[in-house]
Image (cartoon, rainbow, N blue to C red; front, side):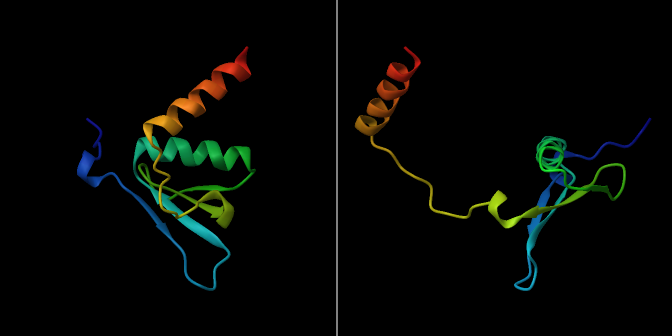
Length: 89
């Protein structure tokens, strides 16, 4: 039987040194690996398979934004939903 990574062994690590122009994304999480591969294919980027479980992709800086999440009030959410519904009709 083939070994399978346990959930606590599955991770995504995103790193960048100040002198680098890309984020180094290393993933052993099936969910995140699938997402990284999809992004890499769409952007024609190389995917490196480090082993049976782990991939590495170098993503441009504009692929990841570190920011405070937007918190919407219920009134604002309702207004946005109403605008989306009107746009569909």
